[in-house]
Image 1 (cartoon, rainbow, N blue to C red):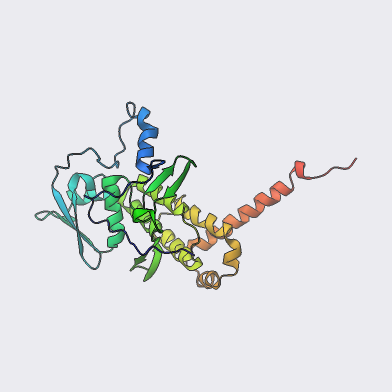
Image 2 (cartoon, rainbow, N blue to C red):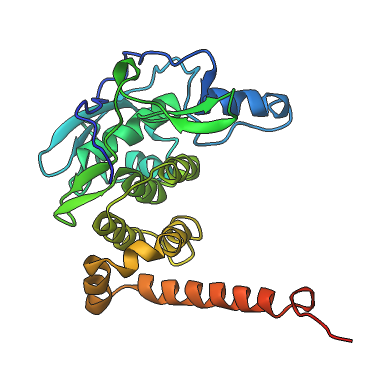
Length: 277
């Protein structure tokens, strides 16, 4: 099961930089910049790329987030890298005189991470590339000790969900495809997740992504199939399936059938059948 980090990240202020990682590691954004530097002369920057070099001289927009009406502030040009906020800033969704946008259905902790991404190109815990192992890792807590909280409370389900799943779905709504990719990569690095958390998060993913989504939904199907031994023994899985009401379980059935067909096809291939002369 996930061990939780008691040192939660506070990300509402983006003026302070976090402690650097070891020299053998580079952040996700640094790695991406290095990898694509030779393409920059040929390609225009992605629309949603955070304005790292921007002078940030645009007007300030106040955002009222969640049931608690937590206040956030961001530069208009930063927000407008999202098609959602671009439309909001130019439409009736924003209170024109005060430059104020109200987002009552968002969770402040999730919106804080989205805002951090818009300014920095990543959100805490950052993705870091271990050059020695050539692998991606999640940075640990402050000072390099401890793990990072992987779940977040969400009023919509009156319980906890995987944070990266909620961020992925929020990025879907805001039109931030690169943030979706970052969130999915981070979720793939998690392990030891409670069955109940997986199923609740999977239901949330299905409810908040379009039927055309081929990333997050597939991630959950593959995760459940890989952990099928645990789920077979899980009373939570049985109750969820009996409750039904989600496309998740039909997709899971189809995925399992496809898996069985693949195994049967391999078993029946000419190379696996012995011939006798």
